[in-house]
Image 1 (tube, rainbow, N blue to C red):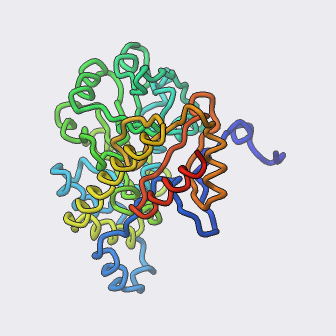
Image 2 (spheres, one colour):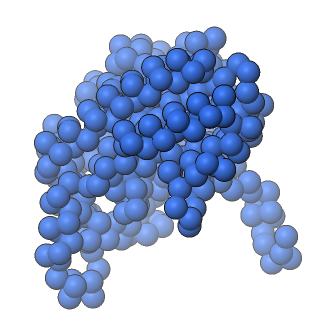
Length: 352
């Protein structure tokens, strides 16, 4: 550690993203979409006048927010955008969860939450999943002294998603602080809580263009919620960087939103392939958790997860293995193309 680091930096444990290999592998480890973005994205890039890059982008990202608002049937004043949903989450932690009280969160969920909690000095109150590997909604709502509630729906890395009725039941019990529902994977079969924002003033929903819109390389995310919460995010953003989304990213995001037909076709293909993959994994003896995301979490009763991970890597297939006590035997497998999933199954057949 450097002598120049502040004490706060010394105490940080950074988030570790999935590997981005340089060699050619079947890449099923970071939940990227296996299909390209909408054709209009390429057209927007080819038609972009590079002279625009000398100018600062619109600090309000008005055109992109209006496009998202139209897509979600909300007002543009209820939409916030940032450089990926991770940046939006970071702003939310600063804006809503620094109340000198614990933040309620599932024990197993998106691993960036504890990183942000550490960075912004937010105490976490962790709640185990149920025996069915589901986020325990009742446990999240049980305590009264809290700084807020945050969870992913569908949850990562388990894939389970609560229906809208369960989210509303939580909101009826937690009214004093912000409830943040992270919907990075919602388009692969779950119900969005955006439908509830006009009825619950403390609900904030975050999302991303990285998964179902095939734009992980662009870094574009958003939040949807009551205007009071959006104003809180803007207050933090404008104290950090008044120009978070560049003009090219806004243009591409709008193009992706316009092509509804491409979006629907891609997500339906991923869902179909996911269910076929689940069935084939179960036929090989795997326990596969039910998933509403673009991945599955699976373990085999006779083979350690680390052994299977290494064996697949040797055969040119990269999946995600979490070296934690709760998940050590599991593999998280991103849903790729049909050919990629065929390669996965063939490799597992040889390993087993």
